Image (cartoon, rainbow, N blue to C red):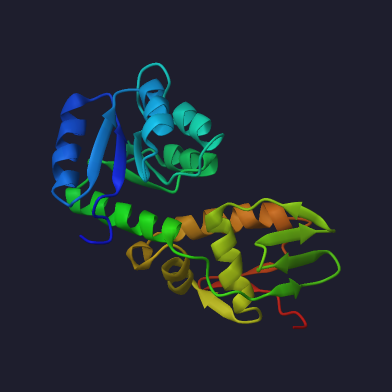
Length: 235
């Protein structure tokens, strides 16, 4: 309990019964909980109370969860877990693309939600991994891990925190295959050992940002059925 004790959670859902149940369960874990019934209330709470993490439902009247997420991300990198219908995979992918850190499918267990909250908070608030210093992959791509900068032809590109962690671990083991479970554990945490779709999605994001042709990558190579390998370079 100590790792989440006293963290402030903002629960955003228009179903009063669900928010009341989540409040009771999360407070029993030592979390502090505030609630909002719609996106506008959530934005007000974000400005006034600065929660440590937000639990955000997708389906809400007026401003839905996606639009609320989009507006939050213009001003804050607060960790966000989306609540989605179990069978709506496109909602999950859309939420991740808009900047959500994770999702939990409805209906969900109290244990599952608390586990995801712990994992997201741990990833978000842990210090950056040990530095690799400055790395020149080739004439086009260089990375300065001291400054957390990725440069393409000298121009800085922006990576999300999860994209950066994934790139760090791939580059750290350049030339060697990292299997799916190993990458999931290092980047997301041991709770995510079966969530290979996260890995595929974020590898796609990284390729779109650093590869000349994402469909024919030269930096992040797929080892089919095993994992991924970052191209070997002169260190």
